[in-house]
Amino acid sequence: MNRSRILPCAALVSTLALCASCLENDTRHDLYVDPEGGVVWTVTEREVRSTAASPEDRRREERDYLDAARGDAHPVARGLWRAGAREVSTTVVRDAPPLTVVTRGAFGGLDEALSGLLDGLGVEHDVELVAAKDGTLALEISFDERASAAREPDEALLALAEALGSMRIVLTGGAFVEAAGFELEPGGVAARMVEPPLSDGIASYRLVWRRVEP
Image (cartoon, rainbow, N blue to C red):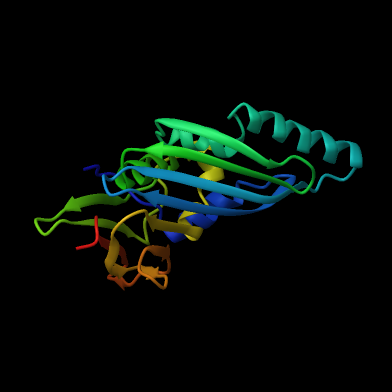
């Protein structure tokens, strides 16, 4: 179990404002959870292209990004390492503009992955992963929407900050049985983060799943 702190919505918007770059892309975050609790955080960056003013600058920026990706040193890979990934690997799917790159980071659990991200972003939150006697696991997240960042975020994690608004949690075995602050997809094996319910300014997320089908 890891206990740490989560990012308020206002702080997230402020953090993302710092991420301006000449590279634009369509990014998807999928966290694959296996029955033993391990997590593979998969980031798919599609249609990556530079918006620099000159053709020379665009080619240079895209080339530099590809070179970094091939060495597991581009922003997403650095962010996964900084979040505490035990292993990171990158696959360049398309090496001509618009580029497509898939990066994977292995973590011991959802609480480990989220805590590593949120601790680095420097905001107050609680994250807990609870195992029940009936064999289910529950991810519980809460934060005070009125709180502000306690310190400047780690720049290495800014490339992952958007995960909190676009994250999908996908089970490789079992099924979700309860969700608050998440929307379950048809079939009950994938969940997306949505706006959570508030109580006295406190936002709470809860996601419960069976590890294996009965």
